[in-house]
Image (cartoon, rainbow, N blue to C red):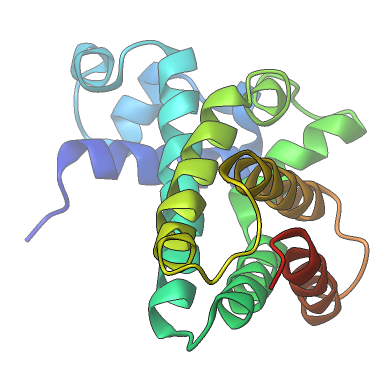
Length: 190
């Protein structure tokens, strides 16, 4: 069974971006690649900017799926954080789309980078909401020794640090994850 049209378009757009750069992606080329009309592409994804946003949100969903699985599979909050961070950073290392976007800082296409930097509010809010929902049961059980405001600030700080490491790693994923788990332990009063 063929993937839904939107998935096909996003997949083709990612492939085109990672092999030829974002500037090489046009709605006409995308339509040809998928075997539909250009108007069908516009009807399905909207403008090129909307296509870029959809690609980034689709990739964000993959990253957040990794985080959710880490929380589902871990016996405690600190282990969940460490596992989630490590696996997110490992996924980021081999992520061709992320590398294409980050390469924009080195003279390549620059249209995609703002989606991860100056227009990052949506990404941050989505990531923080997923993490907060997974941390909430620990807070409700009294397993976190901080106020609600401190918890929200701690989640915000952890998400921002992880995103920083995704964009510009400072060490191996396991080392960074262990360090962030230690920070989380202290920030969350565990």
